[in-house]
Amino acid sequence: MPAAAPGTDSHEPRATSQEPAPTRRSFLRCSVLAWTGFGTALIAMSHMALRFLFPRVLYEAPENFDALRKANYPELGKVYEDFKSSQGVWLVRLQENGQDRLVAVAAVCTHLGCTPDWLAAEQKFKCPCHGSGFQHDGTNVEGPAPRPLERYRISLAPGGSIIVDKSKRYRKELGQWNDRESYLLMSPET
Image 1 (spheres, rainbow, N blue to C red):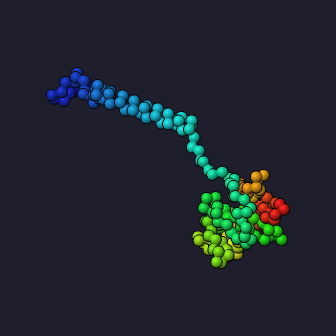
Image 2 (image 1 turned 90 degrees about the horizontal axis):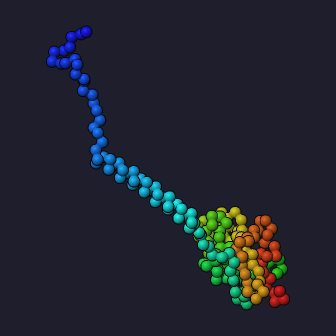
Image 3 (image 1 turned 180 degrees about the horizontal axis):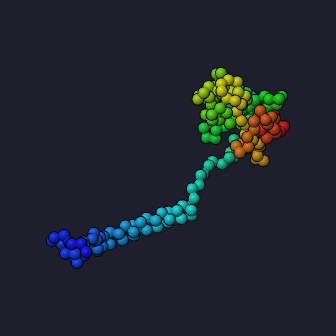
């Protein structure tokens, strides 16, 4: 056996690095953290359950609206802006295909969706965003708009009031402007 170094006893165990024993304070700290995490998870799950019970609902205006009566639109060739701000619709009385018609034109530019303005002096709709221009019937005549303005379904209710239905759209390039529901005849016999 080799000789032990002077001043050391070969029979004594060497000192090893031992971790200190857990204290009451460290135990309480760990349990507070654990309960905090559990409580946070419980709150998050409760929030998700409540969101499931009360979903987000987007309330939109009805697609149909009452646009008064035929007598409210006496002038041929006139654009009525009564429902532009509230419904996004112009009512236009025009001569088309030899008939006196009332049409509901969508106040949405077909370029990027801006709201055009009616310029009475120039007799056209003009989009302030990119300069698209449309005739009073909705046909595009200038600017980047790729197609005419759309029209909405328009009908006469049994009581005599005009109903505009924005859920049904009519497009000129698809030949839909002559569909019977895309206009309302203004002659007295209908």
